[in-house]
Image 1 (cartoon, helix red, strand yellow):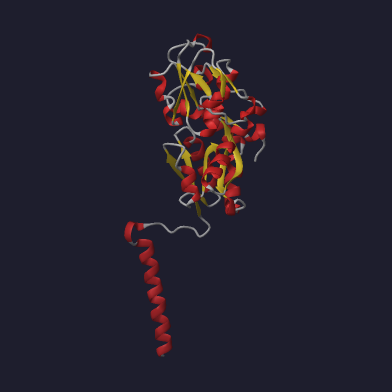
Image 2: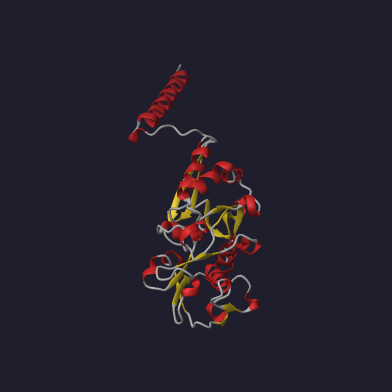
Length: 282
């Protein structure tokens, strides 16, 4: 009898505990055991509608995609490396490679997302030919986008850089500058804001769109979509030890769809273009 009473008491406690969980503080609903939360880091607001759409589709698979936004390019990789994020999706492959090299981290790409062509913008001239001698041109100051910006200025006929400077030349690699242009380096997030104080600025497509610019109409010159831009395809990044996580693979698969492509085209104003159908899924 004592044993039965003990069992009955234990069952009662368990039942009460279950009711407390269901009706307790905050009246939190029970979470299905299959639900998994994946924290993905983004920069700016341009990509948010796309990832919200992806999140709504992943919800049906029991995956809760939590979007975390950052105001600059310096924080998302740090957050991913220390485990505050599960994934991030803001950077190019070459940016990721450079970050790993400089910070001794082991972050890897698990899928391509978009390509966001850099453009030369100006509030003072209508053509790159109108840029005057001694003009000031702002470019992003991170090694990857800085080199990319200089290569764009070169393709526009404004400067020349050393042939052996690869994809990441620096201002010291400029060999010809006939107009004596002054190159001003800024955080990438500040390049659009600088348009009032400089003659022209090289701006990432997403940053331009966030600033109210229409990349397909307002840019004086943009990067061409050829193999030279392939190193600048944006990627979804994860910690190397988790690159084969089944849940992460589902996130990549949900992103690389026709539905996502339509949302990108509808929301980005031409700032971003689907890359997995142009340059491969990974």
